[in-house]
Length: 133
Image (cartoon, rainbow, N blue to C red):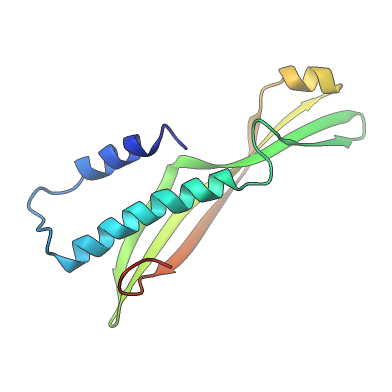
């Protein structure tokens, strides 16, 4: 994913206050949410139909246009919301669509992709008492 899970996990735990107790239910649920988010985002990035290695290529008039989508790792944020009976996890991130254009397929391979569209997405998950769904 974005430099691997380790970078995200190290960053994540460096931000945690040191005085949190492992027995704190809210903290334990939040920690499960953090690991769930890492896995969820990695799964999304791995399952896009088109990738930088295999972009979608279409011909538009006299141009070849290659495109793919990817999650911007710097845009990822999540938070925990306690409800009367359980917890909700709110995940927000930007899906970025990248494109490259060229007159020939050969020159398209040499062209750099640039971001052309950003969609801000929000997903809500429910904690079922033992895991996130």
